[in-house]
Length: 453
Image (cartoon, rainbow, N blue to C red; front, side, top):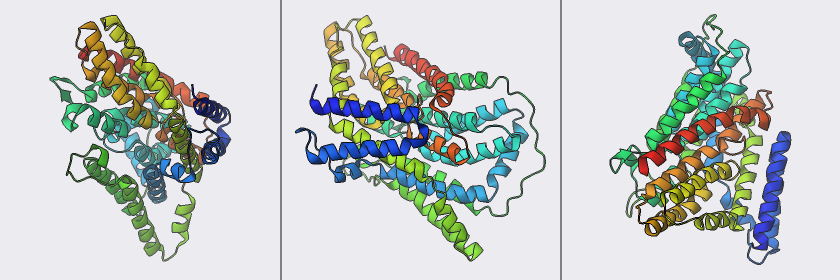
């Protein structure tokens, strides 16, 4: 193993141990770790490891940063308008227990997230959940966590649900409808929905004791509905934009959207909200307050993690994972194929709980394609590449749900709760996320094998 790879692994492990152990200083840890990688790469401490300040800035996903900033700003006005209170009244009117309220919110989050970025989904639905929980005088922690993990799950349902799905679509030559049916067999949409159903049963069971009847006491009055319309417009615009491909997945000559499209959409609607509020109040006070309310704690944590993940990728850690897996080709027997498939799924779950699933998926896609071909040749039994492709996608997409820092949506949800005065430990988060993730992954794991092998 190269010296820079060992160095990167050590720093990476220490970083995550500290973030798990001391949640109050997570941004400080991620930023400090990012600085360590950049300093080591800039000073040339390792001959094969170069990582400059400009490289680090390019590793930060500015699209995600802008999405969070813009949506948080619009959501501030949405909350201030008391619309979440009205929506919570409507939800309570139709769902008469905490148990079914959490189930309904989780299912709706999953539906939206099949077309809209997971982070944006959490930011848009969390205020409604918070309003319901305040009305019921219960902790919002379980409900927000369930919304977050549900939104992450549905990223694999459609071609536009997550960046990992887009990467897989390009590598496997799949279009939007292939996620529903491909080669006459059910695609990832049905696998994901089966996993969502299994995970929903887990949520229903975990809240089995919260069956006390809840009723609306009065109706919240909303005087300004513009923020709600702007938030709805944000969702609809993001859905429409999701059908336009990025450059990497566009066909030759096909129109494609810039990488920061979603971020720009969220920022534009936030600017409209700022202008509306300023014109309404004839004052900048509310506008400035909205800017101050953006969760810079979460933004700093994410920015640092993007740089850290870029560092371990450049140091060869992810390549090492791919090379190790490639050695598992085996004899090509059914048992050997099952072993390789199992390793791909569950290793992806484990690694995606700690590293960004986008570079991991991009690295592993060509590896699993070669594996499928090698296994077919070795054993004389045709191995459909979709077996390995879909197994990889299921594990990599759902694995981020295991930990509070495994996915951007989870980090955002923890930030929302922290602003509400609720500090969420890793143990509390994983109390809900682990059963949810295991139920969803196990369902997908079995289905993909039965369908494609």
